[in-house]
Length: 108
Image (cartoon, rainbow, N blue to C red; front, side):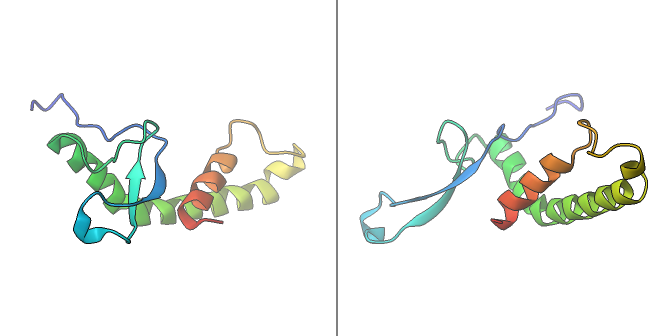
């Protein structure tokens, strides 16, 4: 792979599903699987895409922490500065997206 090529993770949205494993030794148990929009397991891909997905999953705790910090800062800045000029946050502020991502990660 050249330096100009990048390996990308599976495009979202991803979701969690509970399913029954196909192997007889696991009958009666359920497993948790992360799937894409086409219900394909994101960790059962070609090696490069699977590695990119694994890196994204490994970064998830730090990404959640960064989202929470960014949201807190945006809300604080809005309350102390922007609210004087506009009653509602501007449409281009990412606060709804941050709230949705945090809720998806924390199941709130």
